[in-house]
Amino acid sequence: MAPYRFLAGIPGTGFNFYIPMEQSQINQAEWENPANWSDSVVGIYFSKRDSRVWVPKRIPSFGWTLNLGNPRAAWFLVGILAGLPLLGAIVGRRR
Image 1 (cartoon, helix red, strand yellow):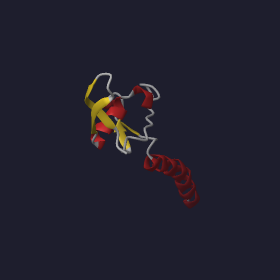
Image 2 (cartoon, one colour; image 1 turned 60 degrees about the vertical axis):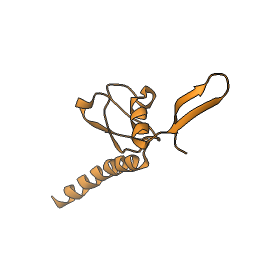
Image 3 (cartoon, one colour; image 1 turned 135 degrees about the vertical axis):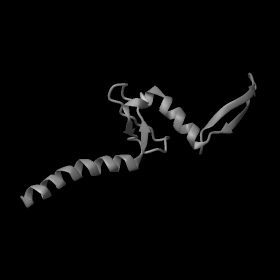
Image 4 (cartoon, one colour; image 1 turned 30 degrees about the vertical axis):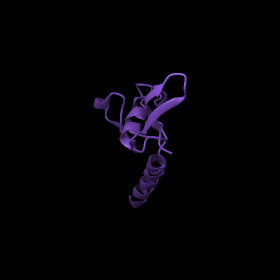
């Protein structure tokens, strides 16, 4: 179920109007939420609601980072971490 954004309501009645958020709005809201970031220096980002694999860092001029809440990003990171030693072993054998 998609998250909803409050539009209007009548105080004290529980009668409120909500509109569904687009995925791009959810992504932006998650990116702006400080709880999804480890800190501003390292910039580790984790949000299961954000559909993006790569997200801009908190300071966009510092580049991009992986959204570790996305399974594709986690597998990408595992692939890189497992692939580099394997590549080193293959190249080392050929010499």
